[in-house]
Amino acid sequence: MDTYKIQGGDTIDRVTKTLGMTWDEFRQVNPNAVGRSGKTGKWIIKEGAEVKGPGSFQSVLQEKRSAARDSAKDAEAPKTKAQWTEYTVKRGDTLWGLARDTFGTTVEELAKTNKLTNPDRIRPGQKIRARIPDVAEKVTPEAGERSEVVASWYGKEYHGRPMANGKIYNMYASTIAHRTLPLGTKVELTNPATSQIVRAVVTDRGPFIEGRDVDLSYGIAKKLNMVEKGVGKVIMEIL
Image 1 (cartoon, rainbow, N blue to C red):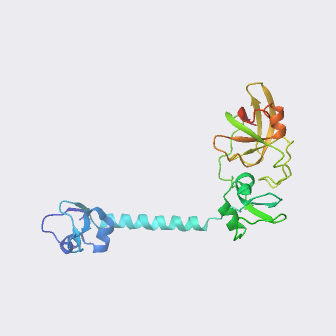
Image 2 (cartoon, rainbow, N blue to C red):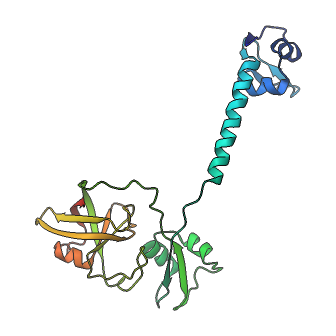
Image 3 (cartoon, rainbow, N blue to C red):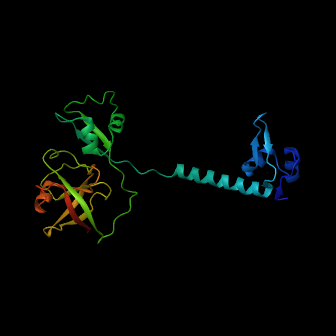
């Protein structure tokens, strides 16, 4: 028997024997047909419930075994090798500022990675390591994609600091920071207000201020006549 409708006066023993199932099997296949008595706390079966028999239990069991195998395969799958970048602390640096502006992570994560018992105490010359955001799983953008983005720029306060690609930031170079585009992506940027056009390469991560999509180097911002304005819209095309 594959299905049965519980009748008034039925007992757990009678129903499970009728279906040819153990009580554990019955509860796994028919969780909505069982409950516990509010007075005694004992298991009960619900009158009128349509319950499934042993054929359904085998299906459920097979599904659980398949799910377990899939989980085991996922656990055995090779993990993507993490990439890291290192920064040498300078006078005036704070862990909070490095987390937000340099690494794009949290103070807690930096403190944990570098085993800092007191995040408020970092000293000039100290090496701080952080994991470069993994972009391997992100969809590679297609050449020709165009979008309007909000751009800001960063300059001398970051000049000479390492970028997400591990190289040193040059505020005059044709580089930009983006949160998700793969490092090395080439783009063309157009200032729609002036029709000025420049090309740049994604070398860093940012910006980390809500409402902004891309951080331009000082050199790029100057070529696009955006230094004084500070923040503005540009058209970005993937090359």
